[in-house]
Picture (tube, rainbow, N blue to C red):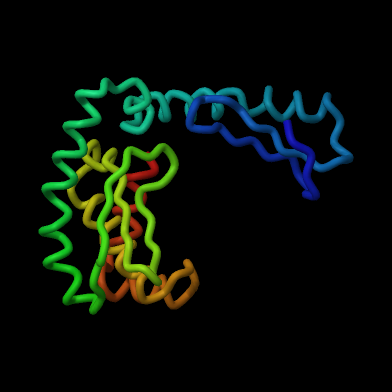
Length: 168
């Protein structure tokens, strides 16, 4: 439970299935409990959806599985970079791979370093391509502002659908 400067009670099911209730300081415990009870079916659906997701399954993966993901992603990314670097007009100077719980990738535009999550091996290949393009576009525009979205629209028009696959 978190008290915040907000008007309404908000419920969020986190990746581990726990429930976070955010509420304004004026909300009573009874009001928060009532909100949870009214949305009990929604909470359960979210927990089921999360439990079936590849990211949830990755939580219990063996070291052998993790090594296999890394092999897959490390083999695919260089080809994607060969395709996309000249299209976008940027160059990756250092490429890294990590098994991350909360990010699909990261980019340091000043150094040209890009890191890709090896868990992307659990998703369709078009998701990996989306993340690569996303990180390359960050080399042109570091923030997620209007310009970033316009660049993404120009380079990869279906990027929103691909991103949605990662959120299942």
